[in-house]
Length: 216
Ligand code: TMP
Image 1 (cartoon, rainbow, N blue to C red):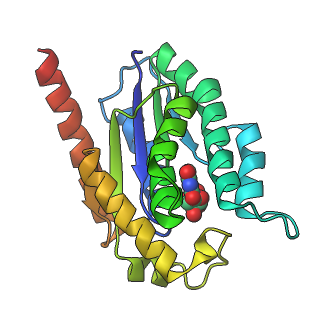
Image 2: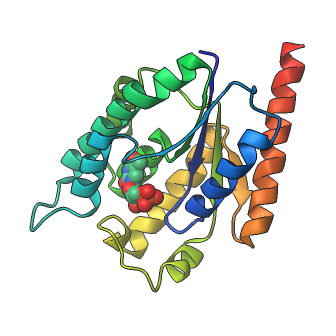
């Protein structure tokens, strides 16, 4: 597949949405993308219309219909399977670029480390849901959990955000572990958004320059 697949990961409140908006503006004019490629900005859960419905069930379940941990895991996997086959693979096959707000790393961090579900099963589900597609580059926006809690203090929590401090620290530990294991690029996101954007830009430029060197 000739397209490129980029992912932003991190705990709630790490600034992904702000940085995604920045990259959506910058990438198409950066000179990194082939002129004929389109940039698709997407997210998990919710990158497709079925995925939007799944997102609502996961984050704002109606009434007392809270999913059990295994149901939650399967719903995130179902969202991903739909996202990969309807949006990501077709875009990459056309040579387009995809930038996703979260991908399978989030399931390992939240459902694996946060909920203590079996990591081997999560990895098997990942293989099924992604059809073996992996990001070219995952950018991990790293912030301390106190910063995450502080930034979200005036906002209404969704069901996952409402899990509290102990859950969030297990998720944060999961992200740190994955960042090393899966060779993600870690960015210190505990600073002004403009600084974080500059660092992301530099990392992307360096990453694609090194790819070019490898191909030369
Ligand atoms: P967002 O608000 O950053 O879009 O993410 C939605 C929430 O869903 C966030 O709290 C993280 C959580 N989540 C999981 O628990 N597992 C997953 O696989 C994904 C993609 C998100």
